[in-house]
Image 1 (tube, helix red, strand yellow):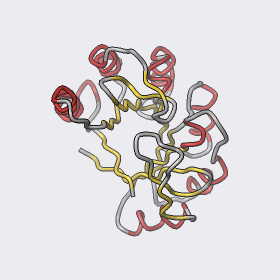
Image 2 (cartoon, rainbow, N blue to C red):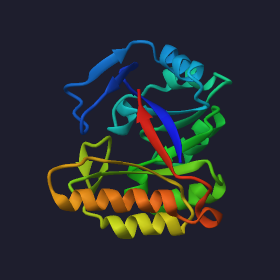
Image 3 (tube, helix red, strand yellow):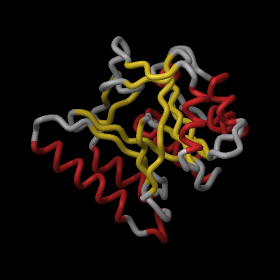
Image 4 (cartoon, rainbow, N blue to C red):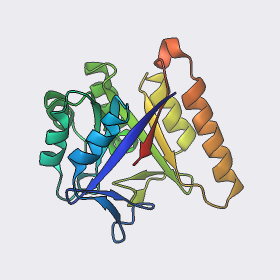
Length: 202
């Protein structure tokens, strides 16, 4: 399993959100490039960068992300608001090592599969779960989609899946989480890729 540090961007700053609560962000740095440098200096070769503004359909942090992509010591995954083939092409062309599609993975999985076939190994899916449903648009909404069917279709298509899960008090959520991680970690490497990936915030 590959552990990848993550930076969530909101208004150009590094933040932490709880369940998509944009009204109460915890700001821990005004300098995303400095945070990226700290991860690199600590020995990380990969970085997961999420544009929270773009994820919920508002403004974006393209200049900030572009400056991070100019670093040569980090392989950067870009996520947040990537819901078209044009957006995929833009970020890969800008230097992203990979792009991550979350809302599109739930609402338009065929688009995700097409992009993944065009860019093997460089288009990933994010599956964020809340209340037994996939969370979309930066955790601001959920979709009434069956988790097992969605996850199964993505894995069969050969798309690598990144996951996060809000653990509530219901025992069913805990079981889903355990099964979810088991599928990511133990899926056959020859067909579905060599590793599962988890992201870890700063």
